[in-house]
Image: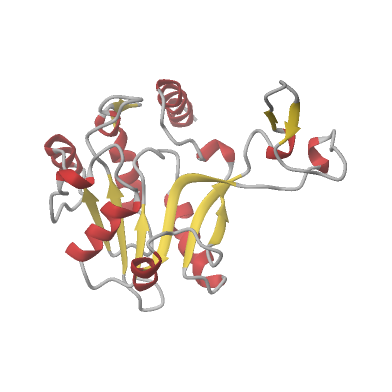
Length: 231
């Protein structure tokens, strides 16, 4: 709870995954991937209730074993490859009522910390915004990116008055990292998106912004987690 408002955290985790099969429950540095998110969410100062949204029996079983509540089973039609990411969250908000703020915590962000979850909530309130999402500065700036036309000529992705050679001369830009999404429940039900011109940004460092989508992502996160545990 924060400022007398109740906070619901949802971990959306479907069984299907093409890039890394069964990744949500695959062993990552000694425990299932999803458990890293559950453990950090349970450390939050503000989360009142932590639930899982999944259609998969094995994911549900493992989430329960690690202390995550599973008040419903997600309908299969909301667990398809083409299901918009907001739909399982809106479904969960119909199933679980009585909260003022909602947080979406994807299990594919195992390096995100409880402090960053809480920081995102605090940023939303501090900026008087209806939503806040975590972002990070991308490794490659879009100001150095190009399209190639049908004559195989390079066209700048972003038009500029002058080309910046040094990285420090580039305008700062940020990309979604998928780690934390926070919003007022009523606002989210109306907007059906965390991302509008009213959304605030919570900046996270690159080394905690990895979103596991490929086998290489998985192996790199495992390396970082093992290295961190050795300190």
